[in-house]
Length: 398
Ligand code: LMR
Image: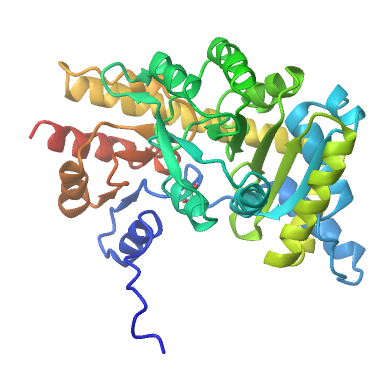
């Protein structure tokens, strides 16, 4: 029956985690997957999330199915987090939000919805992008193309080339954009660049699809939602898939959402109905515990400020690691400009290391990163940053 099934070579990110876990060298360093580790190299349990879970347990209660769209309180909190509480688009009922199985679940529900309702559209992703974007949209039946994004020569965004490509797209093309903390490069559009992008999206009648997996890891909760709020203010119809995996350190709980900001309430109601149907066909309804974590942490007057401080502490520790790595590498490689470690934001940095250099880092130094040269800066701590810098310097020096 299944002789013809093709071998699956494995996921480029999860396969490296498996290799890291199998490595017996005690000094190994994991800079591969996008997970925040603390100064001790542990996956933190945020006190705000722990307190929420204790409350959930104390409340007891049965465990019914959630509706297809998820929990109403969690969905309201997501809208306020993305758009800012009291945003006119929320008041006008033109925002449709469903709770999803992580933001990957949101991306997939959105992809299936779009494949049904914009069947003639193709998807455009940044070059480069998160390894899973392409296969996720292809899995929903889309043709996936890329627009220029990262300029290796400057370390910034190839913004003119990006705009030129987007200006040439057919109407209703779906443009996948990273709202902040671009994965894998760490190179974001500035607010001024977002402002310059909006007229192109509007005039060409393109559908922006934002991926917001790292809200709060760049500059702050509101700052990292700049693109979401600017698009909503501009009256552009768009999708945004957001995640709490990183910002609440609840990776395995699969807390995420998909939001469609529509032209008006009638359109939002239609979109909402079809999103619910899409969920019903895929996994019926999302998880209850995930909803309760999100609604308790975001909606509680004590837990919300606690979480915001915890998120700020994670953001600041990553920034401190960027500075330390930059300082050590600058000292070890005086002729080399490694300023990009300071200008890039969020969990990831594009190091410019080649796949061969990445392999050497793994084999000779037990330092694991993606073969694209992406590192997860949040895997660094004061105990391993020095050794990591030395290993990088050794392979960069040849
Ligand atoms: C990553 O890019 O490493 C994370 O988003 C985790 C994942 O699922 O790939």
